[in-house]
Image 1 (cartoon, helix red, strand yellow):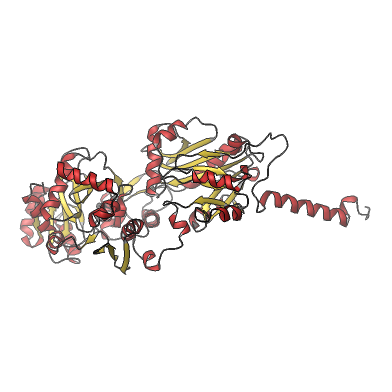
Image 2 (image 1 turned 45 degrees about the vertical axis):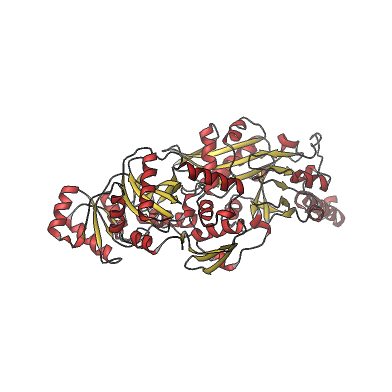
Length: 607
């Protein structure tokens, strides 16, 4: 075998190879956006943007003039968010309009589709991925956008784009209920501006924060990647906020690599938190219920001083008016109204006097003989402390005298006075009443788990609890306590049992968010009789901000039974309804736009 070096082994040739490799890397992953041109690609269109409903994607590599790019961003529609990506010379763009645009603190990631590998594991469990097919899908996408704090889109926009060649929408559908669990949008750069690099991009990946199924985001990303791979795209890009650790972890798991392309956005109300710097430390320490109100107040120019972040206390000041709050509880709620709400038996009496239907009730000190007779007559009972919140100490569906004794002891850990009440079958409806008007209505459902054929019920509860906690900022979790164990036992299981794949098991009887329950907005369909009952109860208590809980057969059915009133309802649980807006309206009417104030005055006259 010859030991002589061939031409390709010569040092100068190796140097040329290394230089060529560096040049190619600079062109594909350099600080500049993708270059124009390319063999057999045709001419790339100039100054291109595409409307996505929530705003436009402005393709920076198609602009040769920074001033024209700025003018394009200036044409942004109110309440929309335009995004200029692959911006050439972003420092020049910012220097020309420093008061109007900013450099978005997002990373760009790229998936090389030529090396993409399909998932080796089994397909998603409990849902499937398909394209958007109906206006109902569009409405469901908006519901998910709103739940995730994203800009919503007119549903007819999605519907008009359903057959578009340049933009595609995929949704994840629950195979049992038909509910939409997640969505993703894709853009084909070749069809939009004749991209010589044959690229594509991913936008608006979002899943329902209350979805129980795992792997929704990954399944949507894979489906979009495979869609563009089949159409000859070379890569799939996306933009993700630098501190969105869970999303970045998912993308890197799927093979996305970070590339140094820049994004520029216009300074507007939606983007405010991205260019004004981090909030004060005391604001970040607030819980989500207090933070929602403080953010709305600051947006209106109302001074917000956090007085005790841990307790959720803050003071709002506007003009000559100053009001101290604890989340949605304010100085406008009197101590008398507070004391009425504090004792559930007193609340019940006030509601009953106002003509609101209430379930039969007695106290635990009535004696065991009376309790046994009540149990025999009424059937399954609810045992709860007279004072308490967030579902603590409540036992539902108690059906034997032994269970009643245990439930009474559990309730007495929170209050000496224990109430025993007939159990009303149905769903738990929370109505938010502010200034004696309905602002939001939502059905609250108890925590459920879905079997996977491998995990025990205890493991499934822990996993579901972790997901609920992550989706609610730590506000919701499923306790592994005696009540959960009793609920599981009544379904015929123990914590150690392994339910078969797809089997759904309720693990809590109460629907409180804090114990893992989920909340589903029904404001637009709630029956007027239920609204009247909530407002009547609020007026009877004389409380300006309250959460009224009813047991109902359906939000569209007038039958109900009053359960309790919450003087400090969690307004953050009811997005996208404008709970924080109406709360601040109540406290500071002069902070409302003049037109809104006039409309409110007219509505009050007509009542």
